Image (cartoon, rainbow, N blue to C red; front, side):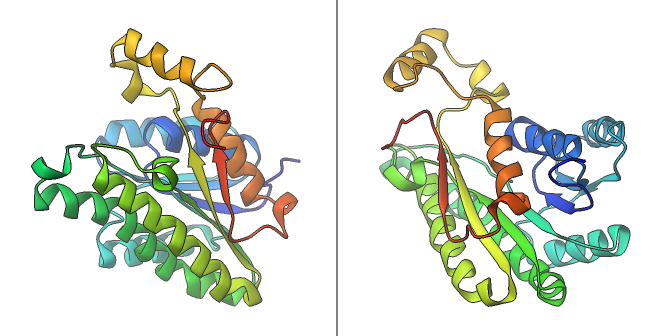
Length: 248
């Protein structure tokens, strides 16, 4: 029996990186997995097959969580297809980095829309189902940048900081219905995105982290397994940093 046996989870932005790692760990722990992707249908289909191989129900949905109506339709479709929604993980996110003086309005709006508004959209849509069940775990993926800030990432930092305030507010509003709301703040995680960067730069980042290495997507996924499972039944309104003591 896995830690998530019998639970149904919806994970946004699961086609690569951290989202993909969360989907795989959840399937390994026995959860039925609904996930979203935006780009390639082939990638979505491949992940669906990979997850189903663990003997659980898996289904991918091509959906843009930053679109309010699309998020509502997505949650309705998941509940119709799976019969439940126990865990919601908001992982979809983008960066449009630039110094503030060069940042366009579009770059600001796009990052706030995809990273922050999508959390509002999916949580609002999922609330009715979770309230009816008198149970649920909401996990929003933020970032250490949302706690510390980062030059050249004013839009991203604002969106990730906003997620923290939103997560804590949801925990206060829905706690009496046995719905938990937490955030996970990854630090420097080595994914496809960091793989294309200059190795010397990346090594410099690793050296600055007390644990002297970057994190793996699976290590973020493990934190999400804990927060989605009954092991964390009295934990809500928290921000769990997965950062090798980068920020203490």
